[in-house]
Image (cartoon, rainbow, N blue to C red; front, top):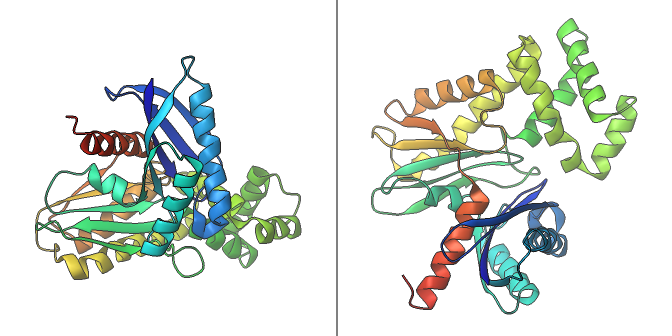
Length: 306
């Protein structure tokens, strides 16, 4: 039976969904990270392959991969997208292969016309479309030069803050971070962060989120700053889209969305200051499933099916 695979890959994991020709989900699976900018192209291919193999094993009937679409962070440039697509074509030689940035996938799920999607996960970015269909993006540059307001940035800022603050709020947050990450002391945690930053900093976010919702002022300050940074990315995007005075849908998605009431409210407040007429919603979409449907659509277009 033909199947169609969709992937949602980032700096910490890869989600895979397999669907049939009717669009029904056959299986789901998860693999390691697949952001080529963060971990390199061979490792990204390995993460996607592992997720695909797990998805296929979960189905009793033999499956042939007719097409796949990988929505990947770290493929924002034409060069990186082409390189990843070439590797996937080599890894899946009998399948139709497409690569989309992790930004294009949620934008495709928005209503037609002008729209903006703010992505706040391990990394951060925004993608938007004006009424004429022109698509622009901002952010998504990786932790070395960007990703402001992301889980990675929040985790890094939280560790730096507790190390230079002896207030009760900082001490409490510091204990929670060490306990959550299973570290004996900061020297051990620092060594782990140097070796595998993506395995440390993003994992601090849920600690900060829970602390903020419990009233910890330091955690709230960290998330407030992150909300301002995220809204600034959307504002940067609007310099080319010019949607500020219009009524349009503005979606929020990513691993940090709907994880903290305080953070969600802070992001919404900052977005409303910049886009007073926007309709702000949390996108509860399944990026891997959306990618699988893109794969199915591309296959149908190529083969003249409807």
